[in-house]
Length: 105
Length: 105
DNA sequence: CTCGTAGTTCGATAATTCTCGTAGTACGGT
DNA sequence: ACCGTACTACGAGAATTATCGAACTACGAG
Figure 1: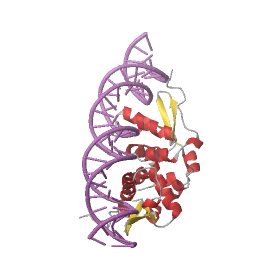
Figure 2: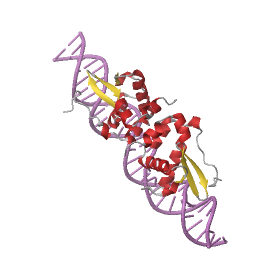
Figure 3: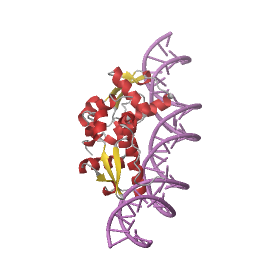
Figure 4: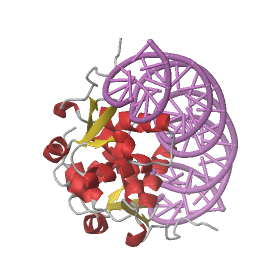
């Protein structure tokens, strides 16, 4: 049970909660992930973005972002492709994502 | 030392960090405080908003919001008046605050 | 089938942080 | 001067979370 090609659970747009999204984006590692995903554009391999943490920690952060509804993750071979849920986030909180992503840092 | 009428420390606009702001807004109690401050409008007494926590916990949350640069707090008699730092937040992250405040909940 | 790569899961630890109660400070009124 | 109200400070407990290492699963290439 639980093979890697099983669809991963994602919240529906209606089930995305602002607090979970804010919490997900408030962590420096996760914010960096999201910024990079945004920069690279559509569909980037999770592992391609280098981070100052081990791979199990990376898994934890990717899951946090996925469960909050910030990214969508789909298996592709041995990799997993992550995409920002721009459409959903823009529909729910218009302007928020752009404002956060374009913030200086 | 440290009398109540001392000016409380607030970060300059340039020192406001997006991560701190997101972290401050990610807590349900603090988000409720901010929503209420926004609804009530300019300058509301911190203690006027009722919360399901004790007053020392309230102090903690107010300080977190203040130190993140989300609100400005000024002594006024025995009370403290809190105001959203709309101008600064809108300048730094245009559209973010409105998007968060108008999110359904 | 075996190997290497990509990622997950589990258990543990360390760090935050949310929460509270108690004690204390500041200010305004009587 | 005294009291009540508003809030802060400190110390401690409970909960959450960030992090890691080790063991495991899945898939593709040879």
